[in-house]
Length: 211
Image (cartoon, rainbow, N blue to C red; front, side):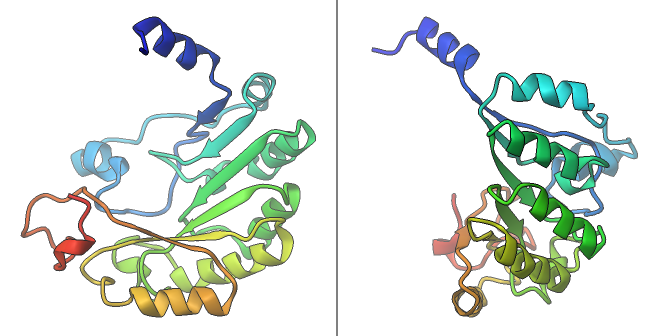
């Protein structure tokens, strides 16, 4: 039987952290908290860039970092490559979830080389040419190229994350074929962030809805 004390001890002693290290993202995904809780109301997205001292303190305790931002994309932290190097030198596992394409290609390459052991997950929802329909401002074709560049450098192949929407529900097989052609794992994700059956983004096929 699991008690409240057990839960508290697990929370206090866990060695993995899911973290926002900044507050920036160039995308305007309609269902993101950036939009639904802040920008739709004319508010600035709260937060700041974590300092290197803060990163070091966290890296001295946690053995696994997941950069899966709820309010930001980690690629926009001005010292992200340095953070990845620190984690590599400290032998800390890390996983990066990236959807923003608005950094120079050389910056992506620098980050890949900074920590080749990192696992990258690229959010490209649909065929690359169509992903901007939800990931507003995303250059999906550029991000796909970055995923292919990452595959040349990283020890583990990057993962293509594909959230199913109405505009891409019929492209899943084509995406799987493209991923297979390039030796990329693809993760098809069913969302539940719908505002009802008339939600424009909700897939028409019931089997493609999480709830």
